[in-house]
Image (cartoon, rainbow, N blue to C red; front, side, top):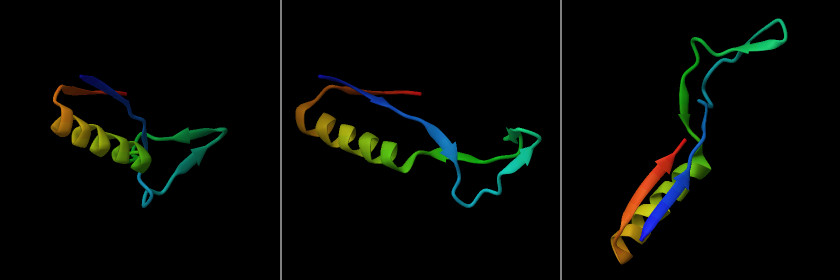
Amino acid sequence: MKIFVLLKRTFDTEEKIIVSGNEIDDSSAEFIMNPYDEYAVEEAIVLRDKHGGEVTVVT
């Protein structure tokens, strides 16, 4: 079984977001895995362990 998980990075919830003009300045921002996507990765690993196969994360 091949399991694909779509993942999106997001700003850390503790991060201070800087807005410069009409744009977000993310040059010094710390990014983390979207928490809901983290649940999907964990579930994919559980399914892989139960049924075999491989997990591929796409971002």
